[in-house]
Length: 96
Image (tube, rainbow, N blue to C red; front, side):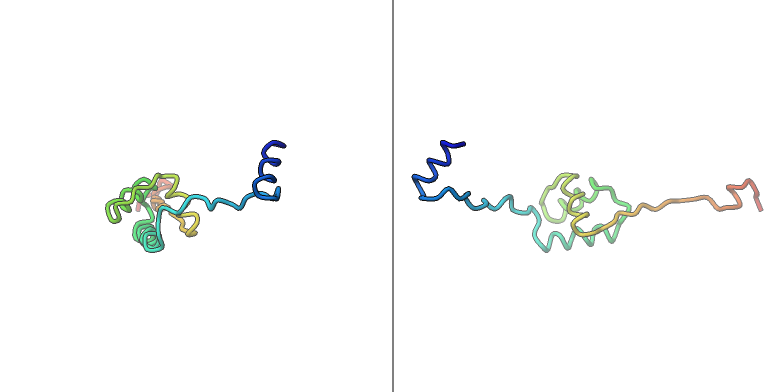
């Protein structure tokens, strides 16, 4: 640690940390994010894997299930599943 600080001071004249490298660039652009929004809104019963497959079919960009989960969270999209329930009278055992 001290060696690297001394080396940095000799080469640059300062011990300040180097600027951030920038990080990884996003895999999807704004148009593709809009497409994800449309895919979820058109079929909110689709699983993350199904959404990944549909996105790949339309854009030729392959992303993982976990990436799709992060994207849907970032876009504040809920994938609310449909719950099919039997009618109340059938549940109670009363048949009309």
